[in-house]
Image: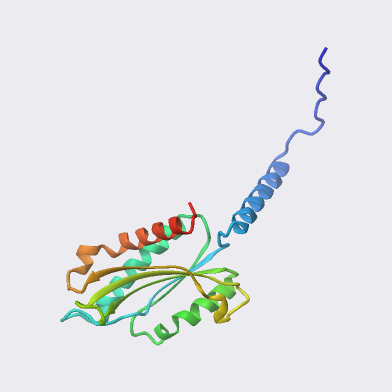
Length: 189
């Protein structure tokens, strides 16, 4: 004969359910971080230029950089990890400090990864190419040493320089593709 099941004297209250949910979230977050998934990311972009097609200026580079950055930033925000955003326009006084500013934001926010997206011209290629680059660097939020900033991932997408590159390449869509390629390469779903 089966033994009767004891009756629980406590029914789950909203407070208990909330506490259980918070513990589950904390456990999942810790497990993801232990598996190499960053706690949060600084997404840094812009500030880079290069040889431009005839008749173009800094606006050409700002449009390409921002569209690529925007596509990448949106795709990263869809992963569920918090992102800190940083963008510098070409020719701005801060543009030369994008790496320093990214490290400062990393430390301030307690993040451990910088995703750097940039569009620039490569005049060493023949013919000259426009390069769309994504780089991931894992770093301790408390460390700013160069030894801790070895790239985890880097990939470039190259296209011949021409004034119609914006219509032909679709930099925003390429930014999203660059993030998808990166997440696949490092094994993050």
